[in-house]
Amino acid sequence: MSAVEAAAPDQVSVTCAGPEITRERGQRQVFCGLAGIVWLHRKIQDAFFLIVGSRTCAHLMQSAAGVMIFAEPRFATAILQERDLAGMADCNQELDRVAAEVLGRRPDIKTLFLVGSCPSEVIKLDLAKAAERLSDVYQGRVRVIDYSASGLETTFTQGEDACLKSLVPQMPQLPPESRSLLVVGTLPDVVEDQFARLFKDLGIGPVHFLPPRHATEFPPVGSGTSVLLAQPFVGETLRALVERGATLLKAPYPFGIEGTLAWLRAATDAWGISGETLESATAPAIARAEKALARQRELLAGKRISFLPDSQLEIPMARFLQRECGMELVEVATPFLDRQLMEAELPLLPQGLRLVEGQDVEHQLDRVRADRPDITVCGLGLANPLEAEGLCTKWSIELVFTPVHGFDQAADLAELFARPLVRGSLLKV
Ligand code: SF4
Image 1 (cartoon, helix red, strand yellow):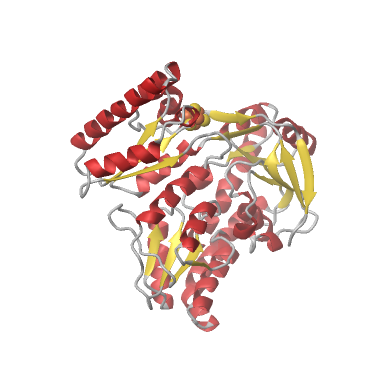
Image 2: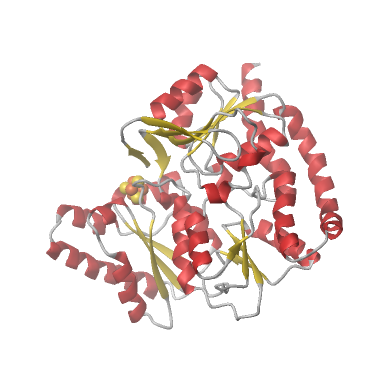
């Protein structure tokens, strides 16, 4: 389901390092944070996500995501029908019953996430208390953690941020005098393995990843932890890690050759490893990536692209497409612009770029219609209407479902944008 928020349209211009940013406020159309469960449940193999929501939430997970996630929609339905305190007390009992049913059936589950939704937030169901209560019941066997993926005031990648932030208090303390590298943001296992090998070749370690593959393997955190962000939408998680003493290594995101090399360089600099070592460890992968990317660049160079605000991946993607694939950026819009997370990315964008934070969807669609870019990156809800108007689109959600990080995926990332253009030109023929 798309969450649509209405607010008074409003535009403000602000500046920072890089291009000028226009803030736009109004109706917006994005997926909610429940979408994150689709990739998080694949990554954390012994976790279970119990959505405390409505039938709508269950339908989102089953149809849009194409997976069956267990949910008890009657909680929310019952709650919405009975807003009194007696109804809420019943709801807690029902939640305990469903949790017992799930955990009885699935002894392999080591972490149970209680995932809040719009309905559970509207009736103010206290999932933190429920998680505490259930943690006591299943002490030593299952960890019960709550987070909100509600579609009110959020965008779909914030679901991952909320989930990872909820894990931070569970992470063990890194012993004093130790140091480690923590890579934050979900990566497909194959990409995680590539990065782990590269860090090993570079002499950086120990390296941990958040989220872990198993909820029983929480990485440690402390004042010796250096954080590299793999995804540009984990700002709340970062701030929770910093509160536990961790330090952010500022870098562009590991998309494309340039971004990946700069990201690795942030780690080698922090570990005092020479530029020559970095160069020799990465040279074979860069040579492969350059060769593969050249083919996609031929298809993309000179093509005009607009990003509608959806995934929070827009800025690093735009940087990669403009600098490494020769594309022309017509407009780059992002739902939220976290200055700290984008500090290393913004200066890499061209001056004069139309950079927009937030959304007023009707105005934005008017601009797309006037600009008629060769390709528009947007959410699923907007893609079909734009295609019907003869505009070529790319679903932004694919960028989180597909392995796109690192040298070996640089050409695959470019191909995600080239494919709709090639298809469009074939259809025209
Ligand atoms: Fe819709 Fe909210 Fe449920 Fe998401 S959490 S599916 S926006 S009701």
